[in-house]
Amino acid sequence: MEAFVITLREGVEAALIIALVVTYLNRTGRSELHRWVYAGLGLAIAASILGAFGFSRIGLDPKSKIMEGILYGVAAVLVASLVIWMWRSSKGMKQQIEDRLDTLTAQSNSQHGWALLVFVFIMVFREGIETVLFLAAYSLTNTANMVSIGGGLVGLILAVIFGVLIIRGSLRINLRWFFAVT
Image 1 (cartoon, one colour):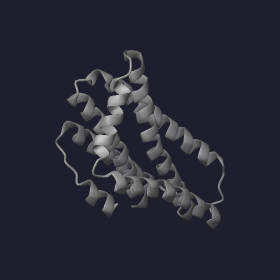
Image 2: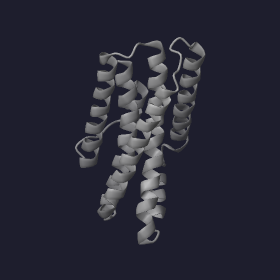
Image 3: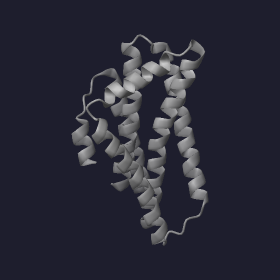
Image 4: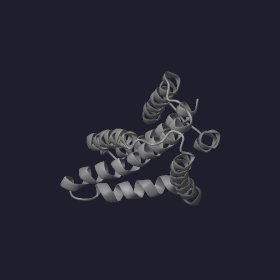
């Protein structure tokens, strides 16, 4: 269940970023830029997987409560910084992101694709690293078994489905409720 919740929450956060960007591009008639968004998403996923692989090669001691605490602490700081940012800017968050996207896509044609790619990469990679840190800390206290791996995969699959449904406009989600529960 823990792996499921971790991957679902972080996956939905990444899906919301992609949904917001794609919806914005559709609404402003810039759908030709989707490929840059998806390229940034793909690179962020690949970088997160590489980060997880590299992290697993460190060889953490599964009995180390200190390392577990450090991992949870770093992940908590990342999540707390996101929560504080959302508290401060929740009313104007969508507008702030859209203003940033306006700035990025207003550059010359050769630059706006790269700017979008970097923007999406950074936003999604952050979620990927949070996922890696939480799962690494979780794996220190629990033996990684097929149930937890399966739970993590189910969480990611559901997050992708949420993202697709949000982009298509067929799903509205109460984000305040979702993040309070998870």
